View 1 (cartoon, rainbow, N blue to C red):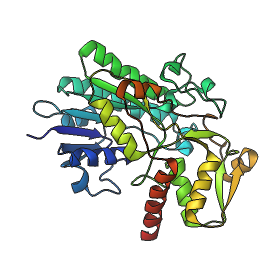
View 2 (view 1 turned 90 degrees about the vertical axis):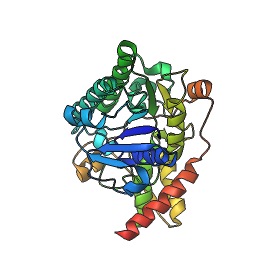
View 3 (view 1 turned 135 degrees about the vertical axis):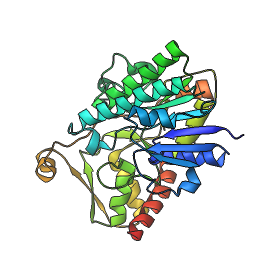
View 4 (view 1 turned 120 degrees about the vertical axis):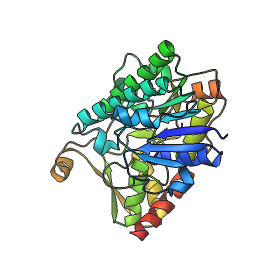
Length: 336
């Protein structure tokens, strides 16, 4: 009999790519997501069974984690989240904390009850303390810097709680968990408009749409690193399938760029004469009706621990990943 995997949040961006990889490896794959279907993947390519359901409902989680003998691999990627415009305005804080916490509480309980053999939890770099990310040139995102805790968003606080929850179930109930902190994962088959998109997709979309300028929130000197989604999947599977280390550990790129530099990559790919327009302060408030959501000044993955424990690192460059993402978004916009 083939191995079995459950991807919670498999109707989303990273979950879809992960499920596709698992199916290509010969796994029998069940996806559960609040979405009725994956927006960009054909279900036959990513899973054997797609269950649409709300994971805040314990009955749904009980049902989808039920499998004779228990799932070989369970991946918990489901969360209430989005880009800066969703996470940092404050308007969605209650839903982000309430919904994601309920999902995680349900998942650890029923994964333990139904004998899941391995469970992966996707945390986020957003759980790192704000005070260590004020210098855009030298942010500290080493795993050991997580405490004393001071995330800059309720999303980050909930992710930190999630880490502790899964690791507590590991200690007290023997749940075999792995925990990773994702750093700005991007690529095709993901949201690129509507307010929940991440910066690389937003920049590509703006460049494709061909305006004379690309709007960048803030002064554009804030820094980030971005990891291409296929590299993220590879790193996730390598962490999941080794037995020496539970985590938490960073999964991200160490290729740090400013947001203006990210926008310029998208402009270069478009081969158009597009200028960068930075918007902040009162001008931003007048246009959007809320304060410009910027997040921390600097964030870059620190991969020393992953290299030490797992012995692997990503090789794809940001420009290579952006080229693939730009091409895909351009095709999607043409199809509309």
